Length: 387
Image (cartoon, rainbow, N blue to C red; front, top):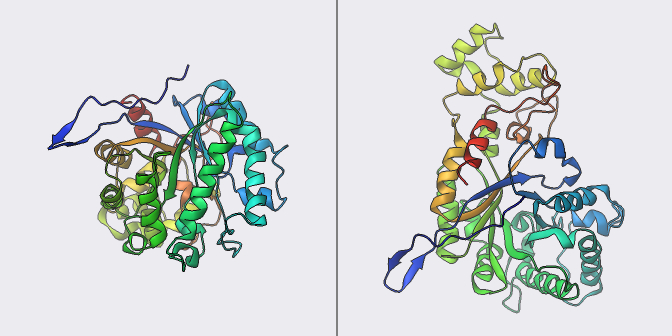
């Protein structure tokens, strides 16, 4: 049912003794930190091979979740048994808990790795890609992103030890196939601050230099489509040829930037407000509150965004063009709304605007199904045909 991820060296750009391989691009579905939201009825509506999830591992370490019985992990197992390929890894929320990274060989490191083993005992047989972290440059305290007195970056030291632990784990399970290992995922690489952070560039150099590491995972939540090549150019200066995967990408920053805008701030927006007899000075976040409280019909959703001069129509096509240019072999996109709130404020996160289905903003359609998101669903399904 599911074909394997292939690397196609059909086109080589030769310059002296160097070459840049051309890889195949694949799209999958991202369930982020909530694999319990995997709904196979809707997954099967999208013709993908890949499912990605990154549970919050410290919730298991702290006893908030139990690895042996957690039903969210069972969803990953079920997906693997059906035949979906699994991109898996952990979110290490050290910064949120104000924790330093564990010292190598310490009791705390042993406790963390014991939890790794418990979770991998559940899902390890089905993992095809293992990501060594999720946004570690944001989820690690600043001191652990800097060089220590030994000239090492603690984040990179921990990442290497986790990698070695995973490799050893699979050696102890010889009937299972060792997954491809990716460093990252690193977000916001278009920011100079991130580019100048030792934990960021040393992690990319680690991915480049270690044969055990297949490539690098990058997140592309942007405010401007030019930030896509800015981030990927930075990666390619340090890791010229190895594969890149993009487990998360969206217009999150662009949406956030404009939540406080008046819809009628341009001619098309004014026409939209007048057409639907909305308050003259209604702001986008106020309109979204009306949407999320059942007061705006589905038919207005796409029309409102297309009325805004800042909105980027068919943005998934732009992403895909850059994915091909920079040899991104896999990118996963959200199926369902997350980060949803009925009262949308200027400061609210806009994650709920991105996914393929609008299962929280709108009730069921006349056929009893979730409404699709016209901003992303048509283009995503079209791009699947180009794989």
